[in-house]
Image (tube, rainbow, N blue to C red; front, side):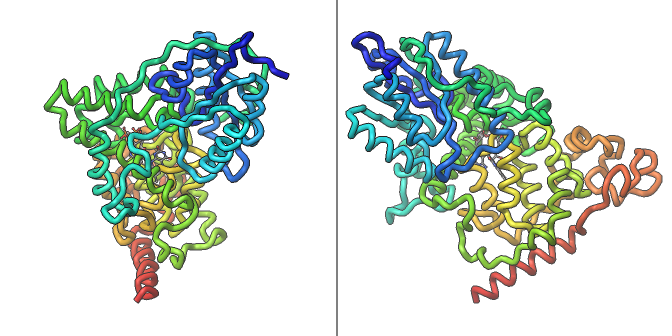
Length: 491
Ligand code: FAD
């Protein structure tokens, strides 16, 4: 059955994936430029080796698709939502609408690339023109390489080499003029994708915190440029300062193009020369996103295999042995206030400040000696920005097993990190309210507070708030000793 195209004019399908936006979307722009009527398509494909999204990301995706659907509808373009392996579901829509062409923006994970390559070959054999575009990165992974033709494993030379292609970076694309094909009557309603949590609905904190969708992304960017970017270099490490862009989930789902963000920061820098350092710092964080995708592309096992294979011999504690500690970590009940504040913020809002991500990740991997994959999986399920490249690269970075990683022997001290980056305890007070009345001097180490100070603050350790589940010095020595076994193995 052919249900889509107008009399004599076959439509073009735009297959949306991690690019849920109309502006600065090369696939959509190219499809619209054909002058043919458009059918927009999204396929929820969680099989075939593709990792199913975590709970928080599913919540985000639901609202992002709702927003995209509204924006397309306002322009007369239908959004068809289908489920199932893309290998079958996408050609079925192309066939049913009698489309002559299909466009998509590229993805960089191995399973996704394999699906796309197979589909491209199949469409070409069927006489359907299939075209892919770069809608997700500033510098695609094959664009830069070392002098010896290898991919970069260290960030600084990677980012230096990226400056050449960046000098020729295109301008962001406007929302194109487009005509929609008649509603093809295919696919399923959004609710049928089952992306929202129901029993129980734990998404209240996410709803209070975020506005998924292209309009929300643009608002975040504008707010960042107007009020935060100037202080970014100095305050980005202070979790209570709210000095970062909070664009990560919007970038993850492609509700705003990275070219738009990079160019907007550059434009701000041109207009405000005093902010040059802040702009360069912010752009280099976008660079870490590029670097992580570069790693995932060239090392597709990044999500489960140590980038440095000497870590294969690391004596992680077993699941049973560590299970109580892992539960305390997840629930924000470790007895270390900055760790607990972070884990509770993550659970409540689906977001977490970068400095605190590093602190909580280091605590799990080093203080508790639990494999980084356990933490990566928890973040995957709870973060709204959970990203196949950034999450895995960052966990391996913290663990010491990654590319250009923090050395294993550098162990974050959760007390001094708290004192340095949350000096008055504002962040801890917000997320660990049972400690809110403790003076700043003791807020990052409540067990050091004299009994009368604890009593005045209404804190009985072991009752309102736990004792530390591990002693910092003992945990540090245990981790270093474990790391030594790797070194002696290598010797
Ligand atoms: P900003 O400081 O405003 O930075 C702008 C953008 O640059 C971010 O939105 C993000 O897209 C990118 N970026 C910033 N820092 C990094 C970084 N270190 N690595 C890669 N990209 C970066 N980021 C994710 O997007 N998804 C994840 O799943 C993720 N998991 C992480 C896990 C751990 C253990 C750690 C330590 C970091 C992780 N990050 C992840 C990176 C970083 O913490 C977040 O991107 C950042 O906190 C998002 O806040 P922001 O948008 O305000 O960042």
